[in-house]
Length: 238
Image (cartoon, rainbow, N blue to C red; front, side, top):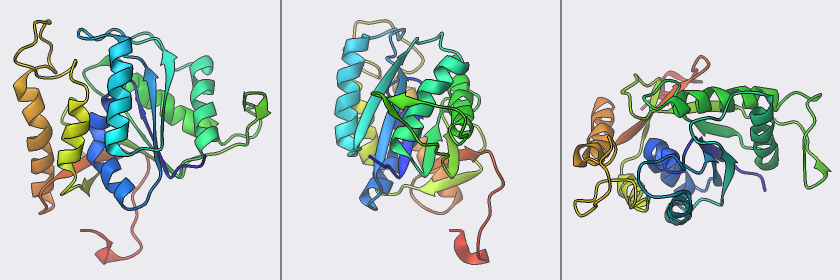
C-alpha cells in the first residue's frame, strides 16, 4: 500500500497531539495517511500498553487513517542505532510515503527528540540501494520521502511553517479524547502527570488558536523542517 503521508510517533497519541488536525485536513483533501507508533507507551504513568493499543485504534478510526502499526520498541530505552533504523526503513519502504511527519526535534520527553532523529536518519538511509531489507521474505525497493517535517509537542518551538487547520481542530480533540486513560479526567483516581491537567488539555486549543492568529486564520499547527523552504511564486504563501 502506497501512502501520501506517513506519520511517526514515539508513543501512541504523539501523532494526534502534534499533527492530528493536519492529518484530518489532508485526509479530507484526498490524501492517504498512515501512522507508525514506535513504542506501546508502556511506561506511561496511567493506563497500560493494552489500553493504549485500543485507544490508538479508536483514534485512528476517528481521523480516518488507512493503517496504523506499532513497532514495539522499548518505551524510554529504544536507540537510534542500526537495529532500530532498519525497522523504520522497512516501514518507509513498505508504504513509500511522499511526506513523513515525526516527533519534535527537541522536547521534554527524551523519547521525542530521539525518535525525531531516528526517523529522520531512517528516511535518508531508506534511499540507499545497498541497504537491503525485506518483509515476509520479499525484498524491498529503496525509497526516500521527498519531505520530512517535525511537528511541535510540549515545548513551544518556533515553527518554520504552519498549516491552516481551521475547521479540523474539533476532530483532533476528539481523536485525542480517545486516549481517555491519558488525559484530563476529574474523576480519575490515578496519579497526576503534566499531561493530565486541565491546563494541558486546554492548551491544545489555545496553542492552535495562537498559531492561527499569526496567519490570520482560526487554528493552525506548526512544523519545523530540515531543509530550506522554497516557493514557486511570491503569492504562494497564505
